[in-house]
Image (cartoon, rainbow, N blue to C red; front, side, top):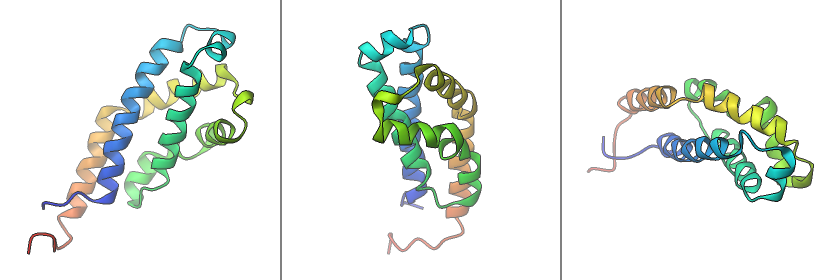
Length: 131
C-alpha cells in the first residue's frame, strides 16, 4: 500500500509531540511552579499537551483510540481546557504529574503497536491511489 492513512498521519504527529513532551518534562521536572510560570517552558508544555489531546480525538480506529485514551480523557482533557482557555490557572505540579503519566503510558513501543494495527487494518482496504 502506498498511501498513508489519516490515523497513521496522526500517530506520526503524536510521536513528534511525544518527543517534545519528553524534552520539556526533562527541563521542568525539577523546577518550582514559580520558575515554570516565569519561563517559556510552561507555555510550550501547555501547547504540547493541547496538541496531543487534539490529535488523539482525531483517531478513528477504535483499537488505537482505546490504546491512546489517556490523551483524550481525564487530566489531559482538563489540562487542555485550562491551557486553552485559562492559561494563568494552570497548576504546574498537576501539569508535571500529568506529563509523567503520559510519558509512562504513551511509549514508543505502544505507538509502534498502534502503527502496526493501522497497517494491518489498511491491508484489508483496496488502494485506489495506485491505479
